[in-house]
Amino acid sequence: MAPVDPHSFTDSTHPPTTHISLTLYLDFSSSTIHASALFTLQNPHSGPFFLDTRSLSIHSIIDPQTKTPLPFSLSVNDPIKGSLLSVTLSNHASFLVTFTTSPSSSALQWLQPPQTFKKAQPFVYTQCQAIHARSVFPCQDTPAVRIRYSARLNIPEELSAVMAAKHVARRSPVDGDALFLPCGDNNSNSKFSWCARGRVVEEFVMEQPVPPYLFAFAVGELDNREVGPRTRVYAEAVPHVLDSAGREFAGSEDMIREGERLFGPYEWERFDLLVLPPSFPYGGMENPRMVFLTPTVIKGDATGAQVVAHELAHSWTGNLITNKTNEHFWLNEGFTTYAERRIVEAVQGEKRATLNIGIGWRGLNEEMERFKDNMEFTKLKTNQEGIDPDDVYSEVPYEKGFQFLWRIERQVGRPAFDEFLKKYIATFKFKSIDTETFIDFLKANIPGIENQIDLVLWTEGTGIPSDAYEPDSSAYKLIISLANESINGRMPREDEVADWHGQEWELYLDNLPKSFEVSQIQALDSRYKLSESKDYEVKVSFLKRAISCGCKAYYSEVEKTLKGVGRMKYLRPLYTALVKGGAKEDDKVFAKRIFSEARESYHPIAQGVVEAIFAKHL
Ligand code: BES
Ligand code: ZN
Image (tube, rainbow, N blue to C red; front, side, top):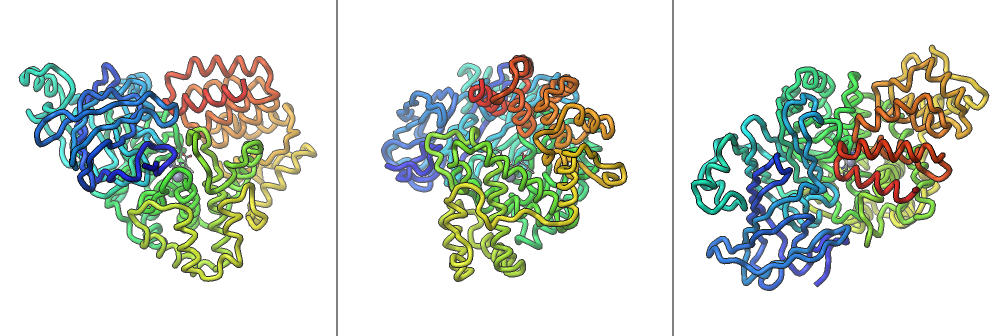
């Protein structure tokens, strides 16, 4: 018996699950899902079989042929992994579990109507990466196991459902739907009416094998707009949200074509986008066929394209080739950051791509500061035994991973590297791999590379290797030098910033010297209105500065921001600035009050992350 992943109870001697057939009854009144899952294993198994669960009530496990119960037990809760569900099989390759999720399921956010744009209907959505799928259904919740699935979502008829899977039908409930659901009483008539009255069933299939963290659905009052031959944008049925999203993402098809040119065929048929309510905890999530996005990427100037480019790039790096465990997360995010920048370069030009590299370089250097007492997490390949991946989420796998691949590109030249990437993707598609597999493939395909680049230092060493590279374009350098000149009280002139977008401002603000003063902050803002920017990257960079210099004039804006959005990229720096070592007592009190008032509106993952910031500093 051996675990295959430090974040999962999955055992290497057990057969992998190949298919799960899910029936989900979404109960908005109790924020729970009554469900069943029919498992198919790669081969029959006898003895204990392990599944991951978190905060699930397991009602029964039965043999689907004989309908006889199978013995099972649920372990006490491990704070990171959850509870081990062990079912005893006797030469079974299939079994059916009935269960109910908890209102505190870590993957699910149940929104009341006031928390949505339209404010008329409730909304629910999943976020399963890194290890939250187990709070929606039992599974071998490791990316080492890839599964196909089908799903039937029983929902109120006023709502509709979308999934990161192919839509098969929207239909009325039929008798058989209720059969395996752990609800109603056992009188089949009353059970059927319980399942059918005022309800519809939406059916989906995922025909390609995917890691469990890519399981995703959302249910609400949704509508969509077509923006390209294989792309629709979905959002709440509010015309201005749909219209602005439609405009923002009009360039998606061009990006898909660039992706195909660079990385090979797009294997997922559709590339739809779902814009979520503001509490969505990430910028984007690469759920296959249906990327999930924060509404903060809609800025009216098509800069949201960068996040779309990133999630699209995962269609090759992450969703086709997947990290085997979270310890190799850089294989997902480092490759995707590299691929994202190649797509951005192709559709928006080299200048945009270089600015993004510059912003990333700054972020990487800041992470070195954050992890100075915990250098393990400055490595590409990390040891995550006993570590919650949400606690160590950082830019390191993204930006150090990007730097490593960019370093290889510089060594071998772009044409050779492009060829290598295509071959890498074609070789490992629909597989889950680790860092060693990548390194072996690299050495086999670029002979002698290990004599030119210290591959071990890059993948296993701490810190930033000296052959990493800060971009040296003139546009980038100009912004950095303007930021440095602020030491002498010089502010950029109108003519210098005339063509600046959000990224230029973000770069400028993040590179301002630590000694920047309150009077300078205020002067900068009264001239350029950064605190009111519609671009959250700019606004948050500015507010972070304002907090560091104790500039109280902006605290109402800080409060509004922390209460208005749930994207962790914004929550983390603002809460950290308010409570970190050296912060003033009244800032800490302010942070605690805001969190107590805003907590309910955050996704459970974001709640946990803010609590971890408080636990570390308070
Ligand atoms: N897969 C990530 C989001 C994620 C990572 C969710 C780890 C849960 C655990 C996604 O592709 C991502 O990186 N999103 C970024 C977008 C950015 C880099 C353009 C984000 O949300 O900020
Ligand atoms: Zn990503």
